[in-house]
Length: 185
Image 1 (cartoon, one colour):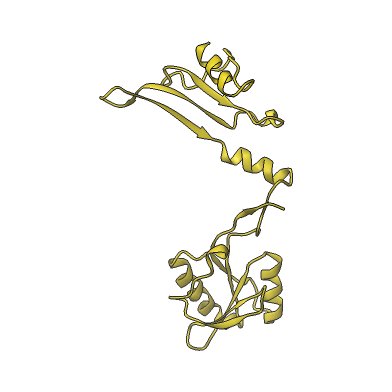
Image 2 (cartoon, rainbow, N blue to C red; image 1 turned 90 degrees about the vertical axis):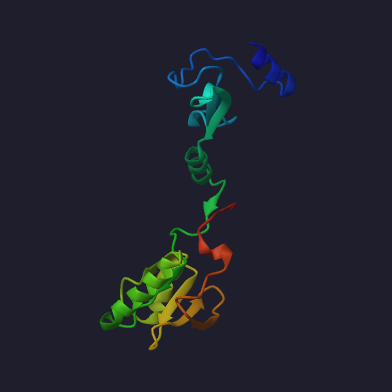
């Protein structure tokens, strides 16, 4: 009870004792914590943990551990319109396909980009470039790579229209475009 009183002295009305909580009976040896988001209690606990008297094996050192339910929080934020993904796919680059006979060249460029950690995909069709750009735009993929005769080619930022020669072993997207992110609407 002293723990609940201490927390409520610091932050009034935030802690309650709930003796129905049973968590990790095989390793927790003291207080167990469950955290609920006010106004979203239906999510269940979004943060939980507790005390371990023997956190380090052999040494008997005590500690407190906790985990945060990131997937619960994100699902609520996205579902309630409190945040949104800045693009629907992880790909930063769509590698265009000139024609079906050159699809292997596009796949090789994609492999070179992926080997350096750049998320990309190869266009599903060898349609006109305008259609491939529209495909990338619908998926919010910011860059389209046009293979060149030398094995590399040009990359186009479809938002600005800027296009420049690029080497698949050296080009990197700007940091803000490298990975999808969560943004406020």
